[in-house]
Amino acid sequence: MVDISRLLSRRTGRMKASEIRELLKYASVPGVISFGGGLPNPETFPVDGLVEITEKVLRERGKSALQYGTTEGVDSLRDAIARRMRDKKGMDITKDNVIIMSGSQQALDLLGKLFLEPGKTAIVEAPTYLAALSAFRPYEGEIIGVEMDENGLKTDILEEKMKKFRNEGKFVPFIYTIPTFQNPSGVTMSLDRRKHLLEIAEDFGALVIEDDPYGELRYSGEDIPTLKSLDRDGRVIYFGTVSKILAPGLRTGWVIADKEIAWKFVIAKQATDLCTNTLSQHIIAEAFDSGLVDSHIPEIRKMYSHKRDLMLDMLEDKMPEGTTWTKPEGGMFLWVWTPEGVDTMKMFPKAIENGIAYVVGEAFYPDRSVKNAMRLNFTYSSDEEIKEGVGRLAKTIREFM
Ligand SMILES: Cc1ncc(COP(=O)(O)O)c(C=O)c1O
Image (cartoon, rainbow, N blue to C red; front, side, top):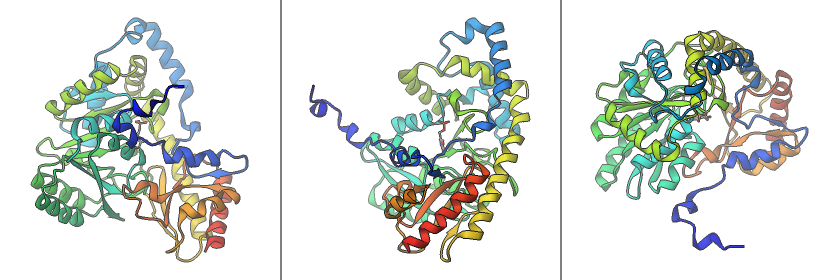
């Protein structure tokens, strides 16, 4: 066996297997109900519609749909997305601002590649999307979290930190946020905070990254303008994806950015995969143009909003005093604060013993500083599992206290 430890690059030391993956191995033990995964419910995938579209695409455009494509993406899809982003998200953009990605996860990796290096500091929400941390870490910048509350990122604290960084000579290329139905907390950033965030970014010359996989999955309340629609000077880079409105297996997302920034993403992407799966892109363009996506989203909303309500009712019913949780207006996750001193990492073995799994909250913090929290997914489990699982979770917290 070759000893590769001397051969590996320094950055591999910063690459770790996803914590969720490791912990969720236990969740596949028979009998364990898991609120830990982040998967859409497969019952929502429009399989029949996609069979029809795939056949049509292959018959009508098979030769180009199976060929390499441009790195920017298939034109008909870029057009369809530009139209959708103008109509639904209020963005003032054209197809030239749209670059197709192999999932928005690729956009996160390229973001790190383009803007991070030793001596640079990325700002994220605390908590934030775990796989964004995994994407940024290998690029060797510093990652600093800024607290949130029920109105999203605390922009007054962000402003204080940015002033401090400036005095210390720290350079912040971007602030990364998931402002709508955040993964992991389910929280949505208020309009005032969105405006404040953009002012701060302008003051300090930083970009704002708006990651928005869940924005179309609203179950209650009113839409809030996207950061990109409020952007006056091309400072916001927006990431979208079909993973939660169609199917994640298609592995297709997009970046919306000013042309100069979009071109940087194209160059970086070219070196990693030349282009996104061309067949997927043709299928998705057809799914948008034929109305499949629009007729399908209400069905996803109906199923998920029912499951959200069920989980919230069960939490209300079963949780011990001192436990609190967020009440998301959309998305796939909610966040639970366990009573002070209840460390959810230490509690995890007991949870598995009781047949329930979650993701420990500390994994979502760049400095792992918060111990008494967890993320619950409400979209994947059956209604019966939600009812039974919340009961098991409440029992586990009581026993652990
Ligand atoms: C906030 C956030 N960003 C990005 C992604 C990755 O999505 P994609 O499937 O488009 O790569 C996810 C997936 O769960 C997510 O929650």
